[in-house]
Length: 258
Image 1: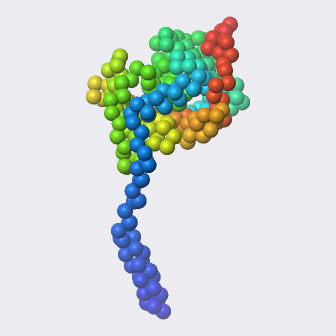
Image 2 (image 1 turned 45 degrees about the vertical axis):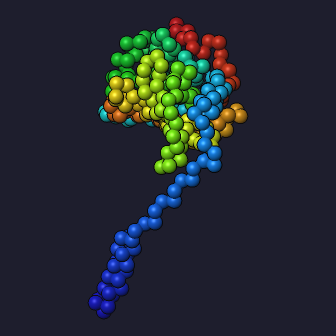
Image 3 (image 1 turned 180 degrees about the horizontal axis):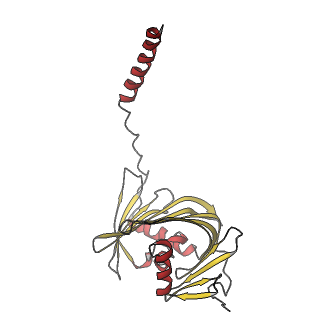
């Protein structure tokens, strides 16, 4: 009886192995755009969209991954233009435990528990102690508002269509800082989906804009990721019902510390 039971089992296993070994059909090739856009056309549409986004406010879930540890934070993000950013980190009861404000000239951190205000290098030291790395948010203000950083200063030097991703691939150079960038743009929406920045031949960071949804009449990415391979860290921000172009309070970027 036992031998009779083994034969069907062996046949079943053999069929499973043979099925697994079959060559999978090749992936269906991505169809190219019906009409290719020129570099000037893409540049004009990207520039027009950048001007459309003036300010952003949203609840965000931030996941920070470093060499040493991982952190998951609930925060309120506020961005005005391309120069001012505020992040309020909340506790379980949605009360702020820390407020970070940055602009072109400085970065401030207010610890609500200790009622202390930290500036610039002091903030970097706290980031090192807490996360094991430093994020200069001045570099990513545009990124987290769904924009290409320093687009107005970029010299777009060439465009090609990538059949593997289906996106336009644009080469660019920062005319002032001389950094090299590679920007991927969706051919249907002409929205940025990926960016790589190099400096002195080294990859500084990669940005991914994903999950575009209509917000305030504009398509806005609801997941934004910044990866820095050299530092082995990553920040992922997931937006919850972002408000775009709804204005910001006059004192939003001021800390009235007792």
